[in-house]
Length: 101
Image (tube, rainbow, N blue to C red):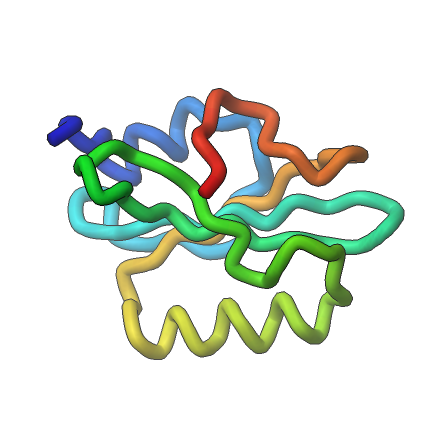
């Protein structure tokens, strides 16, 4: 099992826009990727082996702002400690090292 970096530390190292502050110690992270073609939300998950990974929570295709807002609202309702960070990403790929599942 891979040790997880606390959300507050991860966010402080990221150069994206903080859309929502969560709990620095216990919060999870959602990443919004923004491109001309639309948006994508990545959800922080763990693989079956316990490794850190990211899942395309809004699907493989770009979505609109309304879809992103609705997804984020549902997640924040379930997890009020959640952080939301947005990155400009023309290819809708994360601008950081990430395993996408």
